[in-house]
Each structure stands twice: as structure tokens, then as C-alpha cells.
Image (tube, rainbow, N blue to C red; front, side, top):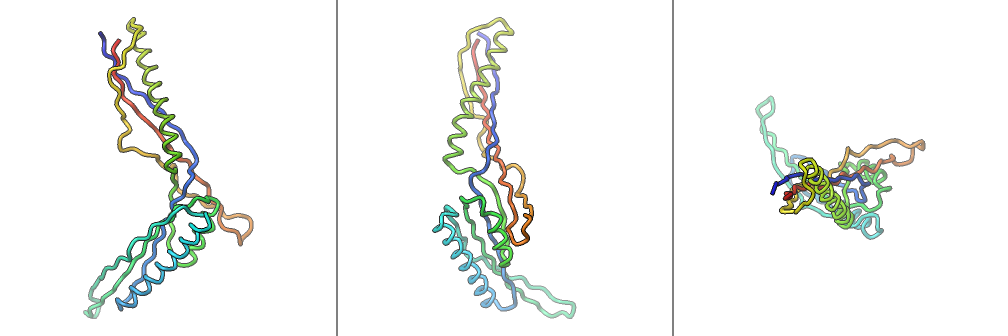
Length: 208
């Protein structure tokens, strides 16, 4: 019996249904206590806004990291010791209302907080998509094996081994957030929701 080893694949681009808004801010100065207090106040303000967004249904959840600190010191041109304390905060918000991304990034940026947006698929959407793609990848592998079998004068195929070749790979956001100013100068920037590339690869061994 001849062994035929083939690969199969399937991929699809689907619009993201979640936006991860990562917010960061830092406070620096010579007095450690004041620096930490300032960062703590910013942290509380971001968390309070995140809680409002979750309560209103705009966001599904949020994660708040502890305030982090570090101290840097150096000597200036006069040989005097300079000490700078810095405290940083980081809060992530998972947004459901993608039409609010532009307004929220503007809101936080104007408040001195750095926003970064990444696009995601929810777990249920990803699970359903992978189920379909796995079936398509296996069918693709079987079609390839059948073609090779036909080429060598064989007709019957027996699947001997099937291996997932997608281990460690997940949905891949395509591109970065794009912002375009709307006609009304007072309106928030329009944000294009990006597609997510989901793919599955398999390796199959057939006997013919």
C-alpha cells in the first residue's frame, strides 16, 4: 500500500466583534510620595470610567494592573545628583460597542492618558469559526490525497493519521486601527473596524 502525506488548509477573514482598549499613563517627579499619589488618582479615574462603561453595556469587562514604580538617578552638568521617581498605571477595557472606539480614544487622550486599540474575536465567535475551518481543512487534505491517488492509479483512500498544524497560532488582526476625521469638527474620529484572519492547517497521512 502506498502512503500519501498531504496538507490541508482553510482561512477566513471576519470583522472583529471586540476592541481591546489598553490605557496607560505615568507620573514623574522628584517627590516619590507625590508621584505615587498622582498616579493613584489617575488609576482611580480610569477604573471608575471603565466601571461606567461596563455598567452601561459599552464594555464587557476591564482589567486593572497595580501601580508600578521605579526610580532613576543621574548627575547633571554641575555634578549634582538628580533623582526622578516615576509611577505608571495600566488598565485594559474590552469594548463591545465598536462604534464608541473613536470617541473613547479621544476622551482618554484628551485627559492625558495614552490609548492603544487592538481588534479581537470573542471566544464564541472564534470557536464557531474554527469548527467550520477545521472541517474545510480536512476536506482540503482529502481532496489533495484523492488527486495524488488518482494520479498513481489508486482509488481507495484510508486515513491513517491527522495532525493539527495550527498549534500556537490564533486569530491575527489585519492592519492597525485607522482613524479618519469626520466632517463635523466636533465629532469623534471615525474608526474602521478591522478584519481578523482565522486559519487552520492540518497534516494528513493516507494509505492508498
